[in-house]
Length: 318
Image (cartoon, rainbow, N blue to C red; front, side, top):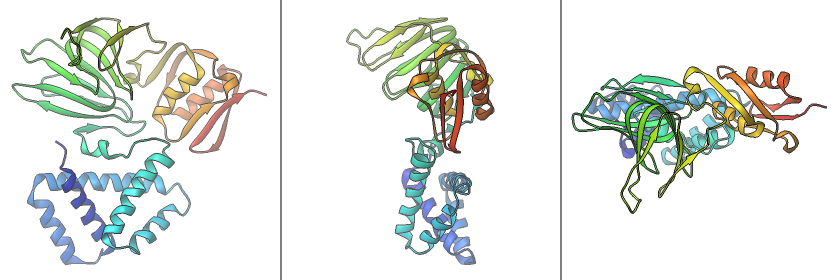
């Protein structure tokens, strides 16, 4: 369940009023009454609180940023302060985290993970759903429907053919039907990537003129766009290894490898053009990406340069 955007804005408004009037017992009671009036109010309140805590923890690493934000919010009216909070969320996501997300999908979706976080849940029908870094999904499960909507990010689904109701995964580009087995789905800007680890998956595209589905079998990978599904060569990276906290590569380019590692950390991670084409194979642990980069420096003729905590680049070893 995700709260209505209007309710979310009401929760933000209450949070700002209480922040600037912490000693006002009457205001606190009014907020408690609003929260208790409807379950959706409490859900929105908890998600706003979680977002504020995350933002505060990020700003504490930036000298003076937290104090500047508080002083700005206290000096403004409620409407302007609301804009400050929204702007801070955008700034924290786009500038400090180096990403193009606003954070809203994470706390308005049924299930979500932050950058670097992975999560595993068992759904009501027994299906195992695993969420990779920076992922958000919505769920609709009933006696008539089993639907996972991938809002953003990447999931690994393990299912069985035990229900007469089909298990569907909805993305921006198609609807996937899990027949049985295990399959990974990753939603990029221009396509959805599907890899079937075991079992079978059907790709349904509402835009295909013939109305036919594409059947995908064990070991196959597809790049799915709105009007076509393209069988791709075996990827140079194990698409499901992240569920075990690993990146497993086979001759992947260094720049592509760093782009993948960058999904699990905040800020910029890249390399100079003269080493971008270096190839590497191996098994790398995701639990500490700084240690992972240190391993690269021992494996390849490269050195790791930290300009700041959020700006890391690899250069050719002098």
